[in-house]
Length: 345
Image (cartoon, rainbow, N blue to C red; front, top):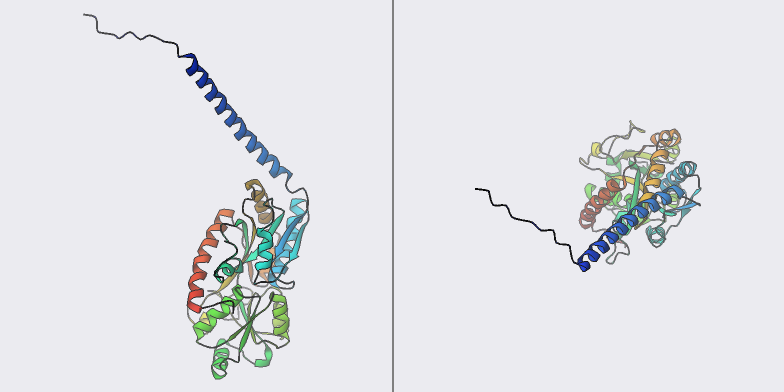
């Protein structure tokens, strides 16, 4: 017996069905072409960028560590990008003035923010923040990290952390500390120290490290938790007393200076970072080009050696890694702010 074998007939598809299939094929082809064109356009954009100068905003007055490092970085980036990177100081509003100017700028890579921890902290100080550090900005790269130094005006004749604590307890409310502005890492380091030491200190905010340092040197304010960049000369020449650093370990630039944790407040740690950010929506190829320029600039012996001598470590990152750091810092600072009850007042 012959096994049953069904007979299959090839019936031509209806004309309408064939037309529909052809249309789908045309659409698919168009999509592929558009995707290819988009990739090509991004490649061309990346190759063409930058075609003119770039503006990098520092939300502080001239003269502070952020301004100093930003200018060094801008100079090195200019050489690699083939276009001038111009640093622009826009102080005010606890860094809001400069930060907002970048947020409102076109997302084309020609306006950047050279930010610090305050970039994350400032929105947390407002009931109605004007920007979201993660959603409203495109991370480009981390650039530096560092611990702070506790700098004291020589007129107080304080040489150690324990001297400062004892003096503050004997003179409640008399000691003040300067910072580069409300919500700055300097501000919160001072608040964290005040809380840990259980002392009273009055916060005096400025529009940047430069003006604050001027008043500290003149003895118009008592203490400052500040970067050592640009300030080691003052320490070495006796114009300021460096009584401790705020890192988990001693600063390599000042190995003979103890940490706060070593000085009677175990577990105390505070640090700062600097990073480059762009407005949200900046094209990926442009971000990649800027990231590469920063990575190259960060290897400059002039930058590495100069900053290392003043206690700052050059450290770059991918945009994604910086975004994750911003998210983490936002959560950590939120906890600290609630604990210290810090406000803009």
